[in-house]
Length: 158
Image 1 (tube, rainbow, N blue to C red):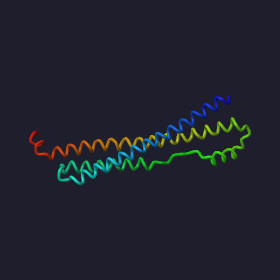
Image 2 (cartoon, rainbow, N blue to C red):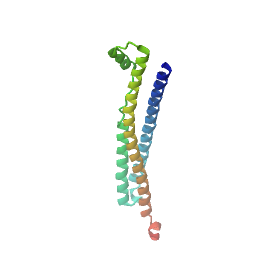
Image 3 (tube, one colour):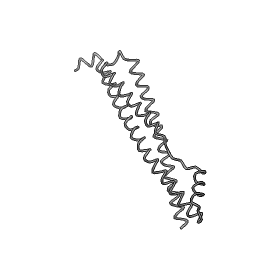
Image 4 (cartoon, rainbow, N blue to C red):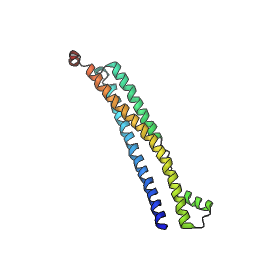
């Protein structure tokens, strides 16, 4: 029975580690999108005379929304982590008698609860990063259109 409990506990810890790594990657993506948004906002503000005004304002608003989505994703950092002191306090409260097996079950239950909570939080962050990416791509398209609409050679072909 020890081997099965050890295996299940190892799988639970692996799931926890994978989720934390995925969260870090997702936050890095949000940071990158935020930087891209900042560059594009700077591009719009410094070259306002070279772009179509209406489309430029629309792109500006879309980029602000994308940046806001990134900030929301970055502020959702409420992740549960299991510390040694909390685990020891749980052992004392539960008054474990069959220490190895019961302790493994308690640790597994705690890790599973953390993984469930962290998965919900990860899904929220992923949603906001996805929205930010979509809005950034839309703003890039709008900026390209606004640049083209401000070019005389392009207007002649329309």
